[in-house]
Image (cartoon, rainbow, N blue to C red; front, side):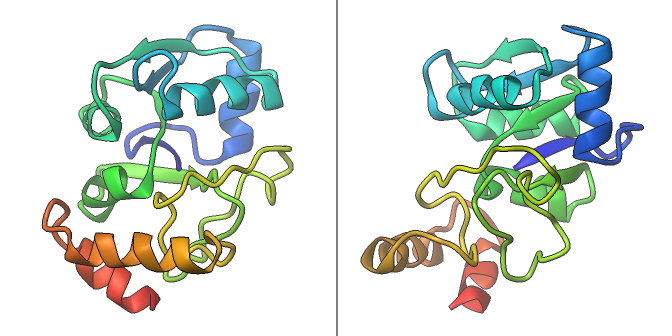
Length: 164
């Protein structure tokens, strides 16, 4: 997911990219440690759009990114929906686009980056539950089963149950 704090004036992926291109390095992009999945996604996003961000590398996973966005300590982040879910449901962040190959069931209003005109769309297995173009067969079933059993994300079980 490509997300910003809810108080951000940026309302779309286009606005984000246009601003970042006009002001290289001004927007703070929160991500994971160098070489980790979300860090790679940020590098791919910069390459695909021509935007340049001040990258904030964190020692942990997507929860660090979600908290930085919700607290206004970062201007933008790319992270998994599972890490962003509680902050999104609480109204603390705005999702500009999904970075996956398809829209998520139950969240169809959130367009993909590809639909918004950017040649970008990856599938990070297990991070786009219910994607209409989710992981193939058995992998998708395993991902959804594990998420349903998880108590780490309150409300995630309900969301995943609705996707099956």
